[in-house]
Length: 474
Image 1 (cartoon, one colour):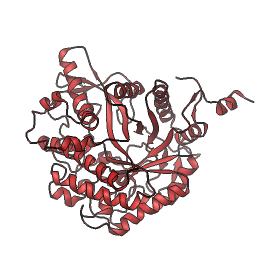
Image 2 (cartoon, helix red, strand yellow; image 1 turned 60 degrees about the vertical axis):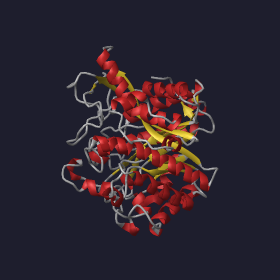
Image 3 (cartoon, one colour; image 1 turned 180 degrees about the vertical axis):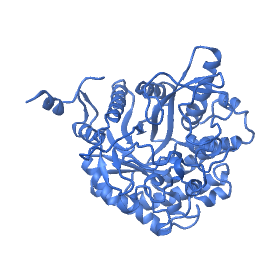
Image 4 (cartoon, helix red, strand yellow; image 1 turned 90 degrees about the horizontal axis):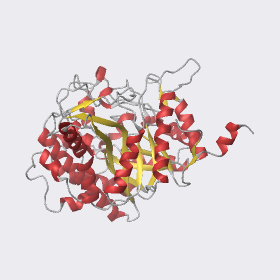
């Protein structure tokens, strides 16, 4: 028996037998079929048609046609050995105008998708909202309107009523920071508004929508597993100066603590409210109790670390937008994002797996104990489809492996980390970046829709089979 064969049979880092190995996508980025079977218009359908909003004027009318190719995609998931698949529901497929009766064609698609996943041994994990608000609700005020939170709870209950008999794991709102501050402050994401005060209202109402939906789901089926989903960053000051330390506090507050404290402690951090100018009338009686409805899991999306400076006019931001936008950092627009000297992905995001451990340790030390899941983690690189039909994305393999090693270290330290979902299962429409940035484990030819598992997909499949990682740490 060779040394390599020994490693395959006996990984160096073995994960718990019930650890969840998955991959994730979102509806708008992969489905296409934007007018099929009664689907209504979303804010992203409107946004992408506006000049200058998306690189090269690209859109997701077809995307990667998952709506019509889902059976083949699910078969591929099973062949890769995925234990779970995290996907989102398109709200305008279910309620074309954001309210009222369920659209039979829309809910039937997701029912068929769930059945197909279960028949292939892949556990469905549903996300109820990944940024595709029905345009009709945006026309009535969007997320800055409190009414949208109530409409979301009704929608969540309708989807759960149809799928809850077969789907146990649910999350509510994906990355509320992005929806609020990229959608309503910087304008980088749909609906493309630059109204900082409205962005803060949107953030609160997205959290309120989460809480109302969690209560609605639990009322229907008490055994439903409900998760909140936040995108977290490790934050470092550029120097030890007072200005840079304050910049790190501010960005950590708006990116991380605003959402974590609300979900897990039932309060907003006092310093963040001060940074935001203590917005009047933001919180009504009972809101924080609703927002902090007990969760079964916290879902964490992690990609990178921010290094910040309190001196305006620093180097180009690692979070720079591809098109003309404002700042998403309401109340802290003076903060600069600077390079930390680390390798970067094709998005310009610094690669730092140590930041993931920092976040997990902080959650374990600063917040009530709760099961954790890495619900998104991945990287865009400039992948090349070789003449032999392969995609040798060594950088992505290295990225995922280093973060999985960090996950294992966290588990060994007693942190209750229960699963990992790679982002993304397939190349897709990358929001304002269009199709130029590829995050997928699977390469997609956007002209032919042909799918080709990359080296990273094959490596991940082997890791899942072994239940762990082989070879020395880098």
